[in-house]
Length: 250
Image (cartoon, rainbow, N blue to C red; front, side, top):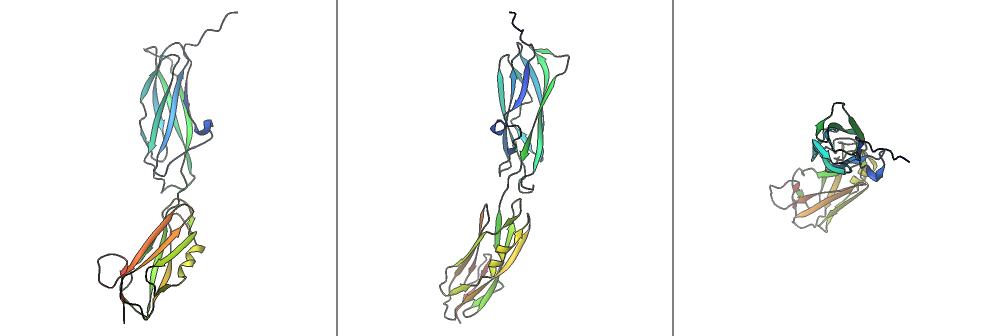
């Protein structure tokens, strides 16, 4: 029986999709990067030269992407490109947009082609869900005397890219005769939108027998994906540091 003659121009552009499924998106890292491997499979009898075009969303920068490539007959050549510069903190979590890679046939066996050929492959980039809470304690208004209390305003800001919530919080201090109330528990009940913030007051009370000394008050909050810590110092002398007040013995 006569064997079928091999094709002179059998070449194919492809992308190595996650888990070999073209419906799976490429997940962008928290650093705003994604790695994508493409290939050109040339099963023809002649070499082919193709020029590439790229179209990526999210104002991404493409690194290491070849402008063109020559693939010898029987070869399957792979190329890994890096997408970077995506501001994942400013884009909503889970957002997907398509990218495309196009290969245009320019030469076959070193000779320019007269009939244009092109192939295009598409995929999706997906923005990851990032949890990032920042907690700050406002500067105390002035010194604090033994036997009195002070109000510290605590602000939690959602610097991630999706709605978040304080899951846990902890208030600690290093002065045995100092107490704090439960005013920050209100933070546990509030959703914080992306870019939003919420505040609550923490009352700090010093015993009448409290000696003059430096005291450190620390507030720790935790979300589903990250922890944030802020602290204030209650100092017995003037200082240029932020978040300070003085605790003085009467």
